[in-house]
Length: 92
Image 1 (cartoon, rainbow, N blue to C red):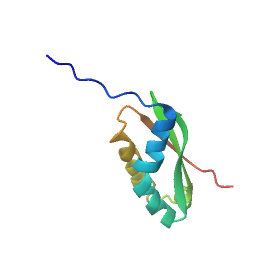
Image 2 (spheres, rainbow, N blue to C red; image 1 turned 90 degrees about the horizontal axis):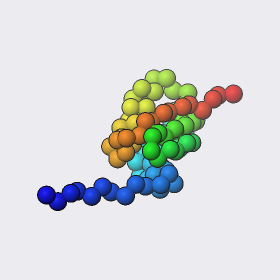
Image 3 (cartoon, one colour; image 1 turned 135 degrees about the vertical axis):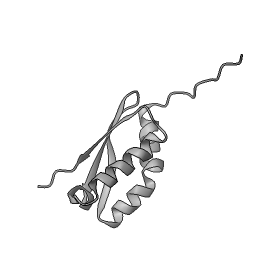
């Protein structure tokens, strides 16, 4: 029986690039319409990614759960092994 080959493991920088430039592109567009944004602040390719929500979206409690769910799902569709942590920018 022929064994299936595993896809090559991506390094942290490549995974960060895919997350920021592909997976979050649509969500980021909606966020930027509301003066918000999301970016990767920590990447551990074997285990987790930490993202920071900033601007107007960090202050909005109305859609926070939906926003966080959408971000997590966008990443988990491609990188199901990653734990996704989302933090909000602190308002000073």
